[in-house]
Image (cartoon, rainbow, N blue to C red; front, side):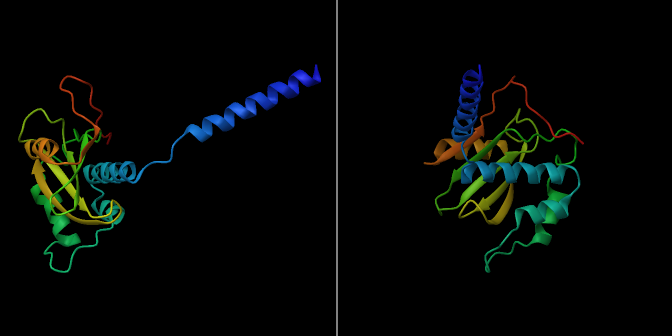
Length: 166
């Protein structure tokens, strides 16, 4: 009886260890998607300073972008960021012709080409070096024309999309 219990315990422990070994570490792209989507959630909640801290921008010297211009974009240029309908499921990451990764997140369900999107830029998938406001049409175009484009979740019209809870 004791041998059966011991064998069962060893088997259970083996299954537990095998299961944890199968759980993969998130890739740099997974981490990029997570940080970008978390930042959009913070922006939607009005936590702009926390989002800026999370993003940790390091702008190029010749860039005219700053943390302050990012705050201005959020406050004045992204009309849909605080509507209570911000989505954080659908996102696209693509490599542009300058070797910069662009993470595009439509702010609400992308039911039309003109839905606002926030694009965060990085050269190494860790440090964000820029941003821009765009639209869903631009993201769709980037997905088609980029040699490297990855959806974390591709948008499917009619499929349920999760929204940030306020």
